[in-house]
Image 1 (cartoon, rainbow, N blue to C red):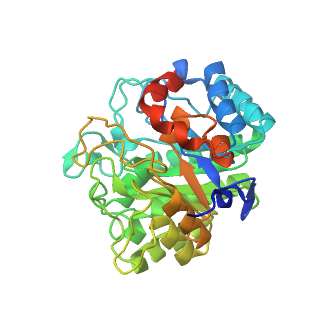
Image 2 (image 1 turned 120 degrees about the horizontal axis):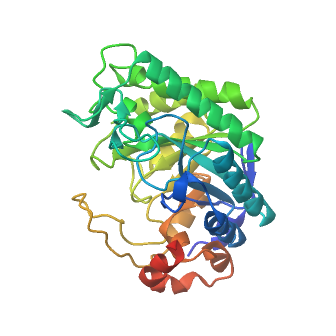
Length: 369
């Protein structure tokens, strides 16, 4: 059995130093009426920081673009009132001894008209597609692209100004940046379409603009995934060589840390190696990597067929995770559902008391409110 103390060693992720190896994964909540983080949001994040999490990555918070929001009551990351709300979150987390990064978000073609803010604005995406072959929204013009790039840069600068410790760019799960990456939703015939290198141009421009806005010393985390919420079997890269080319271009543009989203962290990414996606990202780029995916649980949140029939999970051993840490496969683990059910999960784990996660289903709904 591996030693759980390995999770509680301090770690330097380049420009970001953490007290332990546990991060809170970003999880959409829709608990910000009027798109403004309120005192319940402040308390939600404070409790996880008090519970021992080293780094909190917030729920997706949308940038200042008319089509960026796709769900009601998701917090904005622009405007005096919303930024003041986020400042309270930052101060509360710091007071509790944690560090925090906002996840900056644009949902792209996932958006449906009617969601506020934005009203009747359709979803924006590289080719107007949320799903391969099905045009449902607006194909972005060069002006649209320039506007979104500028919005991400402004949000990053605001994050630094109000005291966040880093920012995370959401480039995963079939949202806007990932819609440019994914050939199924990017059918452009200009310089933003074509092979994966060309389809990465939009993301590279965002990273470069963010780096220029925040300076060289402010950490940029980039979250990416092979899978999409539209297609769990989708893959951007079929080989380590392709993944290396993809990620190293982002690293050269200014990414400091890769947050590698998988549904099950213990699964190998490519044949012939036990390394998971984060392990490969670290090996190929030399950059720190965050792993994630059903940590401490024995099942995915959704079934393989992609239906909305959520399913329960039971606690699972952390031995595999700890063994991977001891091999230096990755640097940090992001925990999601376990931290919803138990805000003090990290402290309980450190104290040998993390066995009460069997109350997961009952606690999860209670803690969400």
